[in-house]
Length: 194
Image (cartoon, rainbow, N blue to C red; front, side, top):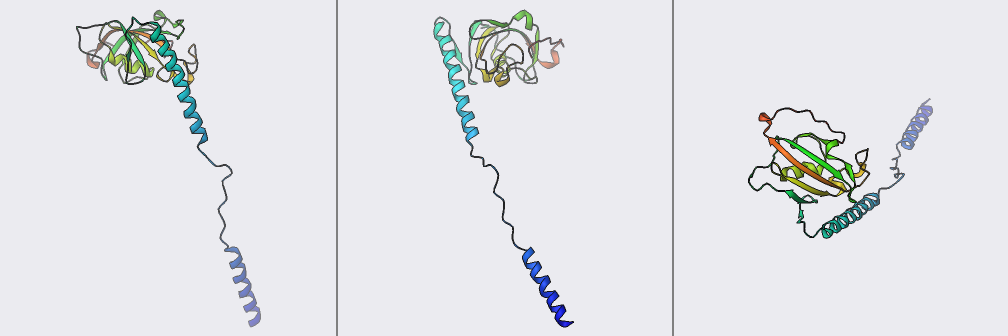
């Protein structure tokens, strides 16, 4: 009986020893090399360079118009400039504006009549990135034409209607008025585009 106990004990120790082998980590099925991100960045740089080339040709084809470059990567010029006022819309103000969107060939995509009236709570509403920044450069009663590369317009998705994916646009905006939030009269925003 003593021998049987020893054999059983040795058997348990042996089985325990075999089952305690350290498992090795499995290798991943696929490895991330970062090539997708590198290729995506290269595609975006090429896209932006192409759009900037188109913008440059529009600017060069209109030498009498003084285009200004913004810090955000778009260009603009004043059609009507207000030299008297100094105030510009700031965060929380309510701006009333009209605008028209054209493609880079000069075709009207959305007319001003289709898009009016627009009421925008500055930096509180989600609108096209270029307009969000451009409106803050304007003074009351100014009319400005913006040349927006696609990343400042409707980007990769377009507007899911008439503006295609990665389409740069020309946007002419008239800032009719703006008031601080507490003085603003609420208006209905009717927009087929936003």
